[in-house]
Structure formats: structure tokens, C-alpha cells
Image 1 (spheres, rainbow, N blue to C red):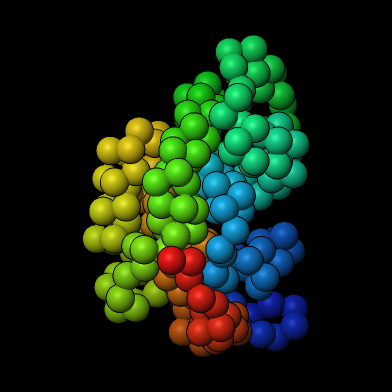
Image 2 (cartoon, rainbow, N blue to C red; image 1 turned 120 degrees about the horizontal axis):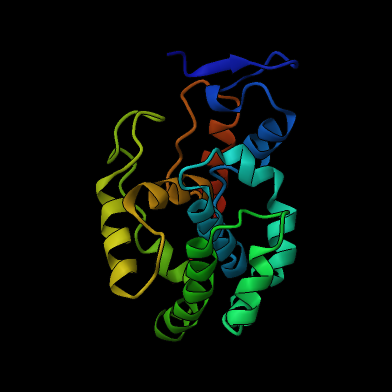
Length: 202
């Protein structure tokens, strides 16, 4: 399978964003760029959980609806959601109406608050798991890694839900913990430069 496609502008990109303008925009401006903001990190790990068993495009097209439904992924607000909120969200056609994933998001908001109290920030916690660049092999060749297994195990121990190693690996790709853009992709060097300029929270 080829790892690159050439878009309308002639630039090579990772094959997975072929065929949809919203995919290309997400690929070019978000995927793999380092994130240090706790709310954005919480959003990303929650949306990766909702993506489980579905296509990422399904989630991406509904992202604004998810943000509206989950208070902009302010985990302090989501942690206050109750059973009535769960029922409200199950009636929201703009999101993925999966009871387990909705309840997991509320649970994870509460666990996120605990994690911030312990580690100072979600960013400090997640970036402490940054692996060696060559750990998972060639870009776009894996869906799980030793680090995603360790991070998944630690999150589960802390009570997080829908954070299996595959979901966590996708989160690592999305938030820049690894640069998984294909060699030759127009965005790979941009992500690498952004990472060099980024100081992970301690």
C-alpha cells in the first residue's frame, strides 16, 4: 500500500487523508502537532474513544456537535454531568449515541481532575510518556506500541475507560507524542519543527 497521495495542490500527504477536504485540513494543521493544552488533550482522548469501531471521519464531521454536547470538553464541567445528562446525550443525534462511551467521557472527566491534582496538568502526565522516536518502527506501520500499552495500562489503573492501547496509540499520533506522518509527507517536517520548538510541560 502506498503511504502517500498527491492532492490537488500536488503536494504529497499521508494516504489516509485522501478523498476528503476536511481530512486534508485536519492532516495539514492538527494531526501530529504537539499539544500542551489540557482541554484539547482531554477532547482528543475522548474523541479517540468515541472513534473506536468507527471511522475517524465520522467523528471529525461531528466534532463541533461533540464540543457543544460536552461543554467544550471542559473536564471540570463534564465531571458534573449526571444521569439526566446521559439521557440527554443519548437523544443527541449530532454525536455518537453510545451509552458506554458517553458514560466513559463523564467518568474520564472526573479521573482527569484527579490526575491534574496529582501531576499538575494532563499535559505533564501525557508528555512524560513520550517514547524514543524509533520505538514503534516505520511511520504508519503500527496501530499499537509498547508505550501505548504502558499508557493504556496506567490510565486504566487510574480508572479511565475506553482507553485501550489502540485508542491510546491513535491519541499519541494525534496529539504529537509521536510523529507518524509518512516519510515524504509535506507535513512531516512541519510537525518535526513544531516539536523542536515545543517544550513539554514538566
